[in-house]
Amino acid sequence: MKPSKILAWTAIAVGVIYFFVPLIGTFEFSMRMRRGEYSFDAYQSVFADMQFRSTFGFSMLMALFTIILGMLLIVPTAYWVRLRLPQMRPVVEFITLMPLVIPAIVIVFGYLRLYNSSSWIPFTGSTQGTNILLVFSYITLSLPYMYRSVDTAMRTIDVRTLTEAAEILGAKWPTILFRCIFPNVMSGVLSGAFITFAIVMGEFTMAALLNRPAFGPYLQLIGANRAYEPAALAVIAFAITWLSMGLLQIVSRFGKLAPSRP
Amino acid sequence: MSTASTSFIDRRTVVDWLGIAPFMIFALMFLIIPTLYLVSGAFFTPDGQFTFKNIADLFTPTIMSAYWISIKVSVASSLGGALIGFFLAWAIVLGGVPSWIRSGLLTFSGVASNFAGVPLAFSFLATLGRTGLVTVLLRDWFGFNLYSTGFNILSFFGLTITYMFFQIPLMVLILTPALDGMKKEWREASEILGASTWQYWRMVALPILWPSLMGTTLLLFANAFGAIATAYALTGSSLNIVPILLYAQIRGDVLHNANLGYALALGMIVITGISNILYILLRMRAERWQK
Image (cartoon, one colour):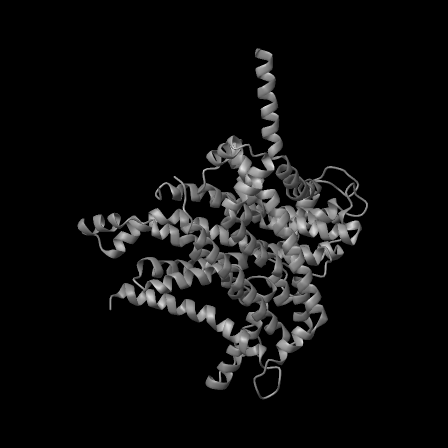
């Protein structure tokens, strides 16, 4: 065997051990709740917890709103920049990458100072307002991923020709946008949606500091107070991430198979 | 005639700009103004006087030690992640392993780089905590007590090894395309000219790759520096890193000075900002060879 091949397999082995041991460890730990034998008691305890259901549902709802509102904001913007304002592309791209540079905790700190109950726009003055602010904060966090996936999908279609064709056939702007552009960038919209879903479901900082009963703060609370349930929750969270990323892979592979116009 | 056409152009320009107005307003309201508010707040006293005192106060022992621990954890986890990630990416691109390992590792990396936050902390507690699987197996099978060596998952080393779980996959994901871009001809040309493998890597491959390597390491650094959920769930507030200090400050003004809190946030933005700017510069350099 060539030395380079030995080195390659060593690297793979190290990676496999590093990544799989914690996953196996978590799974094993989550089954230890009953003394002396393995059982799924920790999972039963988690699923029976009312707070689990309510926080999980809350985060799902927030993720849904984030995806819908985020896409309604991102797709028209990406489309418009490609069609009419190509000179603004670097600026828009730079803005969408800023949430990767500014830590989430700093952004939410700004919100708390700027939108408190005694400010001009008192988002945090009411429960409904805080929920809206939370959705906006999630849109901000997922900007880099949503914009990137939509813009990549838009690269494969000829936006200008599609728009002109639709205009010649007498379509109005809403028709062009929702019946022409959206369906054509669906693979990008969906991959952005899945990654956003994975981010929102586990997000801790924003929800904790805005005091909303989301899944992330619930996980933290259980971690501080229980022994075996956290491991079960980690397995569940990993399954959610795996599911979203798996769907993303399927969607992006599907998107590549779609005929791309020259 | 000419006035009509100018006004037409003007109207069109206005419509053009109106098209991205929603996005710009959103970005201003929920990204740019909140950040600028904190940044400017760092230069004022609570009663509105301009001052550099908040910045100067960052250099007190408590805050400096928080920054120092944060930097140490971020450097260690980004270097460790970059090193292991590099070898993994190299193995799947140039190491001659079967292609199912390549696609498997890339898919897994996509998942693992997004598996962060609170659940990640739970995983490592269940594995390397006092009653975790590895700790127990080492004790029962080899009679080796991990915790008697001074190891603790709730420490600098524990946090570093936990962060690497999302650092390594990120390195693999970013570096694989860069390694794919290495042309076969470069290798062949250097072999024909009589270079050894070592010489090829030292004189051809690494000089081309180093902007990618450095740039990605900086990205990993910024990634670890801003992370809070994992550290908070893992160590509570026992490990004094900057994001946790800022979290405590937002929750309960532990520094007893709101504007010092803004300075703390500014410090974080400066550090992640510098590493990201360097990343972008290095990336531009790297792309010269990857056309």
